[in-house]
Length: 114
Image (tube, rainbow, N blue to C red):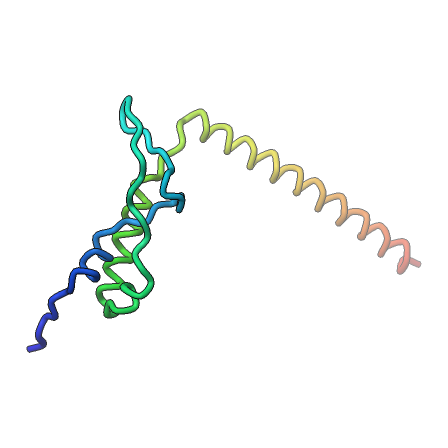
């Protein structure tokens, strides 16, 4: 059976660090009534290169999960607004294509009709 390789300190640190969307080290984060500075940083490229394919995959999945935790679902009012915007846009495009089709059809009929 294959032996499981023990991670060194740099590799373990790279797996446990979470990348931050704002790369500036002094970006404030609201924590209740207090504000704190973000101290997390991206893992070093050299350390990530030292990780094997499975460790990099685990790091990638952890980063995806951390990013998905930041996502918020739209409210019902936002959903309604989005639906109205999409329907209006589709209606405008539909009318435009109908008009262009009609004009091309009239042009072809005038050109080739006897």
